[in-house]
Image (cartoon, rainbow, N blue to C red):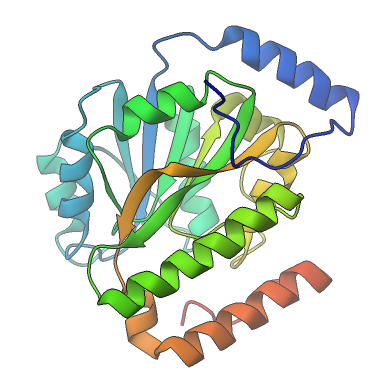
Length: 259
């Protein structure tokens, strides 16, 4: 089976890249443990659905880590019901939460997911298979679990663009959920904590220099429409275009993005 379909081209740019490929690939076994890392702040509305979808996995080779930043609602209380490992992170910023969770992770594969993402029952099974090939990281075929037919069409179109950019060698993510080999994640020092936006694109691009980064077209996951519903499509596109250009041109974050 060719599990690298949908991946970007790969040409190791350094001896480090070649060495990591050999070591990580040879050490991956048939029963890889997966760590779900979920940064939260006041996510009581969504966190239960996310955790339930993880608990419903056919293959139970996982742990759940919730990294909470000063939630004032029942987020932590709900997470405890699902036997999630709770870590408190006082620093605001998505990169801090993700890196803090990764430091405590025991899995060989790290799944960084937002609290409103929901997974199909065979997710861990499929991810396990994907990482038996020479793959360093990837993103999922996301769609909305709410919204209407136009919203889902818009997401399919966005996925189509991202998938083809990755195949052409221009690595980007589609937000909400990313999957990486832990050894490779730490080989590039994880998420850049100085970035408050586009930290996901930044990490994916660094990973892709050492190993293949893929769009997993056959692994579907679901997220909420809350981000576009909050501002509307035009404002959402304007904000994200500005943030993305700022990163790719000057490697800077968009101030006020999380306000």
